[in-house]
Each structure stands twice: as structure tokens, then as C-alpha cells.
Amino acid sequence: MNAPADPFGEALAHVAERLDVPYPDRAEILDELAADLEAAYHAFRERGLGEADARDAALREVSLDPADLAALADVHRPAARRALDRLPARARALAEPAALALPFLALLWLLSAEVPLVLFLREGGAAVALVLALGALALFLELRRFFVWFVLRDHGPAALAEDTPAPLYLAAGAALAGLGGTALGYHVLLARWESGLLSPEALRAGLREPLACAVTGFALATLTVLLHGALASGLSALRVPRRKTGGP
Amino acid sequence: MTAQREARGSFLVLVALKDGPKHGYEIASFLRERSGGFFSLSFGALYPILHRLEREGLIAGDWRDLGPAKRKKVYRLNHRGEEALASERERARALAGALARLLGEAG
View 1 (cartoon, each protein chain N blue to C red):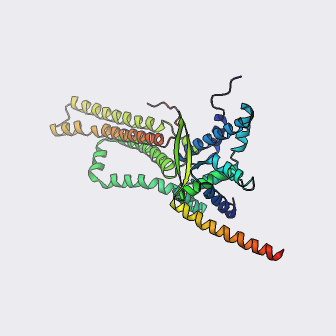
View 2 (tube, each protein chain N blue to C red):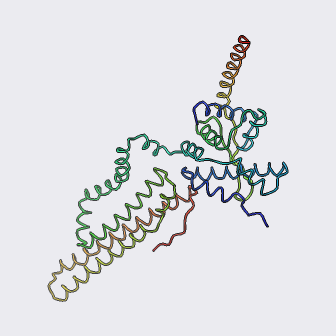
View 3 (cartoon, rainbow over the protein chains, first blue to last red):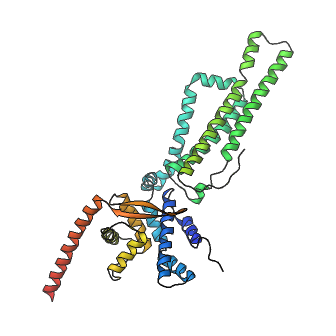
């Protein structure tokens, strides 16, 4: 029987699953462990052990138990998680959502403080509410990922399971809702124009106002797509293994 | 790991790197062989010590390519590490001398 291509692949995958260390440190630890396993394997082979026995002996010698993994996790714990760990449980439960919501609330405050922007949004009519809801949810999900992956540097299986195209679908929804709102606005405008009820001033305003809905939808969708791409690039730069996901 | 074990492990790693750069397996083998098996560090204990010493700036790790998608990390003492080793060596000698005197008096 041929020897497996990577005799320590399974053992390393098992360590990777249990190692609570952020990337790229996690990838470097696995590389280091792989090199030491190889070195131990060759040392046992030189002592006359067969392939399988040398492999088993190397795995026994270069093994990490749960206490070792905890010690490694402690050495590599990111500063933000250390700071949060020092807080009492109740304070931590408040601190995490607050830190996450802060940039989002700041963005909302900036938007509401800009009166022309609010007027612009109001021009879009009721459909703008749906566009804003979908776009805000998409941006919130992206900000949450940023906080978990790059501030807390949590790269555990649960955290990385959030690497889905859901925000892209929401962004597409915001863009489509924006288009729909604009189309509806023009439909109403055309109906009024056909009935001869529109003054030239009302026609000019009517041609401009529905655009707010599409512009808002596409602006939020574009922002979401850019953030999504930036987060994906950030994960790749950290050598985080990405799972294949589809997107709209 | 207790603080005492960790301090002893750190000292042993600094000693192992005194003669030149080594990777993890070489450090563990060096300690076991040179001490006749008296001192040994399991890999589980070794990695946290190496990484902590690297973060504290006492040792530096350099990656060396071993071929396609394979590389190993080789550690070396830096200036701060040499100073820490010299200080620890003095303390170890003082401790050994005091113990020898104590045992001599007792004997």
C-alpha cells in the first residue's frame, strides 16, 4: 500500500479545529508543527523505524493536548479579546454590542444631521424606507463581520461560518427595491401627466424625485459590495481558508 | 503551566539557542540529549514558550523554505535574549553554588 501524500494532514486538521488562535498566527503554528512532525519522522526513520511506526512515533512526540492548545491560545490572544476578557461578564455583554453599534449609529447620525440628504431621501417616497432597511441590514452584517474578524480576531469555526453571501443578496434587494420605487414613481407621474393635471414645475419635480429611490438603493448596494470585497481581501491576506460561496 | 515551570522552560530554550539558531524539534532534541534526558520539554510546552519569548523580543523566528508549500521556523537569540540568558545563568550558578555549600555543610 502506498504511503498517504500528506501523512500528517489529518492530525494537523484535527489541531486546526481545536486551536483557538487567529489567523495568520494559526496558519504559522500549523506550518511549524508540520515541519517539526517531518523532522521527528525523519529522525525516527534514521533510527530504523518503518514508515508507519515512524509516523506514529512522530505524532506521539509532537502532540498537543488541550492544556497546550489553551496555553498557545493565551499567548496569541488578540489585545481586544484580552481587554474584553478582563471585563465582568455583564459589562462584556454590553461592551461587545456597543462597540459594534457605534460606527453604525455614527453613520446614521451623520446621515440624519445632513438636512439635504434627509430631504433627498424623502423625495424617494415610501419605497425609500424599504431600500434603507435592506441596505442598512446589509451594511450592519458587514460591519459585524469586520468587528468579529478584524477587531476581536475571532477566526473560530462559528465566526467563519458567517462568511456567506447574505449581505450581497440584501444589497441586491436594496438596489432592486430602489429601482422598483423609481419605476413606481414614474408610473404615477405618467398617469398624472396623461390626465393633464401636471404643471411644468410639477413635471420637473416629478421627473427628479423618483430618482432618489434608485440612487439610494444603488449607493447602499455599492457600499455593501465594496465592504464585502474588502473583508474578503482582508481574510485572504490573513491566510484564512475560504469556503466556496455563491453570490448574486 | 505554573510560572516556575514556564520560567525554567524559558531558561532552557535560551540555553538551547546559545550555540546558534534551531527549529522546534532541534531545541527539544538538544535539551534532551545534552542533559542526558534530565531536562526535556514536550512540544506542547515548547511552542507557547517559544512564541511568548518571540513576542517579548528575547528571540526571533525566521522562516526558511523547505520546498513547495513547506517551510520551517528557525529561532535565534537576539541581544535582549543574550542579556536575559546571562542574567539567568548568573542566578543558576549562584543557586547551584548555594546548594553545593548547603549540601557540603549538611554532609
